[in-house]
Image 1 (cartoon, rainbow, N blue to C red):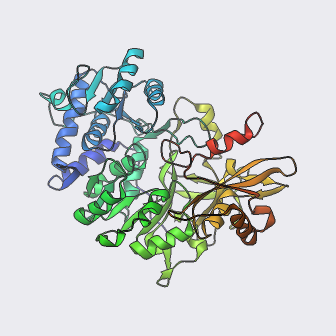
Image 2 (cartoon, one colour):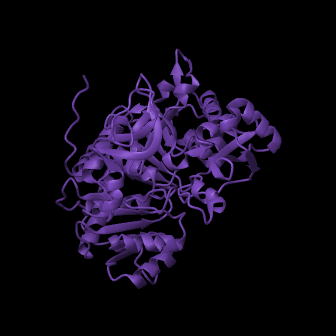
Image 3 (cartoon, rainbow, N blue to C red):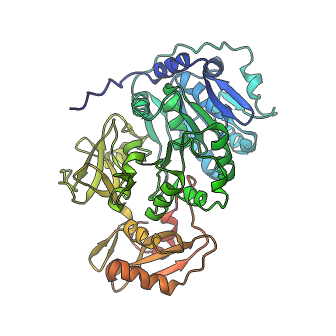
Length: 524
């Protein structure tokens, strides 16, 4: 019988304080030529917290960090949280207009930013009377003090701030792939659970995390939840595969996360064999389905280090995990059925497959994937109606269709809104995409339903060739029909050099579908 979970209904500040003190002499952050020990991170983030409070910020207020990955951005994040505030991660890949609306909608009281984003910050200040603190993380500005100047003279011992378990640590935005982005309320209790999950066999003092994926997204939450381990965080400001490989070799990186498309590009690097990547223990992948052929190639090239996972902003990172050793069976690469799964429930999650009435379905049956546990968010910010739509009988509804096998491995078949109904049959776009990406020369495939007078919807594929490959649409259609049969195979194929993407880098199926359904009733 599994041991009971600890009590997570406490302050995440206690977790941070203990971690920073326990590992004081160890290196915590490395960014370019900057290096910070845990003691220095403790001192600087405490000083930021005090400077915020001295500037009129109070517990419960919100602070935004608008920056590419950098050490000061992470320190500012910690400072906001240690002042009892709520961190608003602003995605620098969003448009200026969108980010201005985010900071206004979430009523930000403090703004930390890099110089290149000052235009947006000034627009917020023109439209809001709430901003009491504005800090330039880079150079001196006529509009805001520079980071070091602003910190000067403030105490560096972290302030004593009282927070409750349901007080918010962060309000990240959903990806917006199925509608307008919403703010998700992640509490102190949530982050205490994340910390427990990260420390349950995933992290140790020897862990060296490479933070190349945006820290406004999964990367930042991983870093916050991993401080207890005493590991080292090496920060890169962008996903540059040559720099990533050089950094892995130089810093002896053990852990990292990249979306599937970045891993595909990594495998295409002609000099991948020139770098010593042997320090890697876990290369996380997720946020989108991964080609099974590419996953097998990654295992062959990088070794048994791939770690799959399933999470969403509403229940980040820890719904399910496919650990590196689970990619193998008897020393060989596991069967496709295992590799196509996202793993088993994590230490803080309970999984179920539900029908539309909220009843549990038996092993092997398709239904909506649901999860409950201490990692599930409080819901959507200022939107109880939208929150009610994703909760049923005590479960959080993920919006994904899938099934569980006899061993508890979870397979995701499709997003509920991406399922195609053609001629009365359900076709799951991810199944067709996987089949297409097993055809030689196809790098990435996206499958959508488009209007059809005969079938209601018909299957259409948009295909990106692998680098240097030329593809013929007719041959793709014939091969797909041979592999999938007449119902599931695409009726048409379009070749493309790239796809529209959300600001988080995910392929934007909503944008791809939109032109076909303009003026029609199908939800896009």
